[in-house]
Image (cartoon, rainbow, N blue to C red; front, side, top):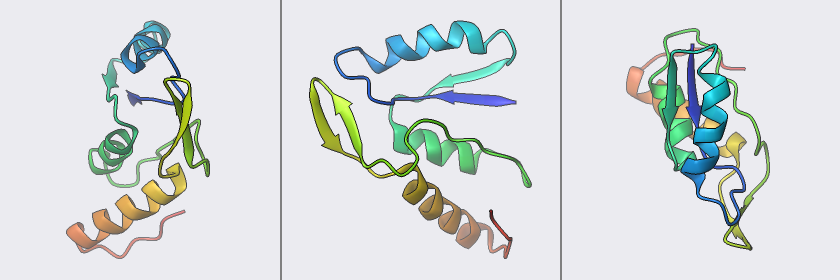
Length: 101
């Protein structure tokens, strides 16, 4: 229903340029495609802007803790750690005891 395009090892290429290239294909099947250059913010938005019982699919980083930017590898938070932290915050804010998989 919604796609958030964000960075994943952009190296020397601008994140937005990569996202725009992907969007031309994503928009064929989805009306809500958003550009969120900051990966942490993209994961946060996916969780906090989703409806209850939504399925959120994060692709690319998984447990990786490095991003390639401007020819160098820099540390980053893994998708797993981001997801766990934002789900815990979501549950705390919404005071809901839900089972998360």
